[in-house]
Image (cartoon, rainbow over all chains, first blue to last red):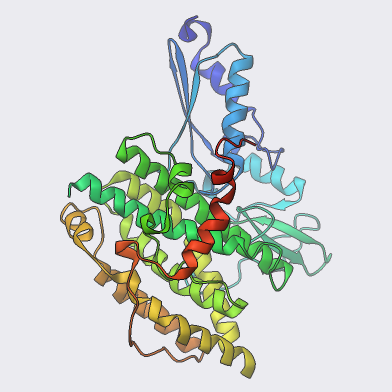
Length: 167
Length: 252
């Protein structure tokens, strides 16, 4: 089978773009910015992805899910390549995905606001509670339930919530 | 020594230090003083293990003998490990871990910052990626140094002792040999003297703020460059390598 004749690049990209993040199933690998490139050769499809965090355990699942999706479409010979440059940043998360995160209960990263304080957190950053939209929230820990999240508490509705932290 | 051989060794120094510190941090899993710290320390462990994977995989590619990240992690003995002496120090109490991690994270922060302009593209990419992660590690440990140092009499006393006792393992971080010289000429490595200068500044700034005394430089242990270790690395490897050595073909 010649993959170029069977599918256009756009078609294959669409198949891949629908794969959800295994840990945050409301957003896709495309919206997250993990899916970087796609190359279709006559006898092989090469998908390039980049890790969110070097140790993110979901990366192996991304890879498996990509291969499974392609196999289901009759693309048996596929390869997933990992690139580290340019380094993934939360700024690549699309607007739609940010809204989906919020509805899901995870406060989306405040765009372009990577904490520049090297030794100490540099001043308060306003993270709105995804449940009641209050700005009266406080950071409990820079490390949360997964590598990409910090732990906050809302001081108005008193609910704890995850914040998708900026890198 | 060829440039390639030097580069493989350079990758192992970075990768092994990440791996061993990651393994140490994972020992805190379920033993943290509070839940948030338990989660923070295991998160940091995961970052370090991820960083180690990149470097050990790259070392294997450079070597070209088919060794994988797992081969490097599980099938080498103590005398083949190039991690820093600091990274293998036992966790001790929470303050001991904070002191060790702060000294090592400040080193990683400045090393990666400098290596982002390495002429080796993989090293540069790894540095840029890891820098984002270790910035969080450095901030986490620096904030704890201040909280404990400028805390109660007991916490101050304890963390000052932690720094005093671990200080003699910091000299090892900055030693250089022919690997550094060769790679410096190629624009791949960075001069450890430059890293030491900025590291000193960071350490002084945080210790000052924490109202702690910087320990005096006295005898410094040495070992990293020649894969010579304290008695602690063997015990750590015994635990880390047990399963793949006992069941070499185990899959899960």
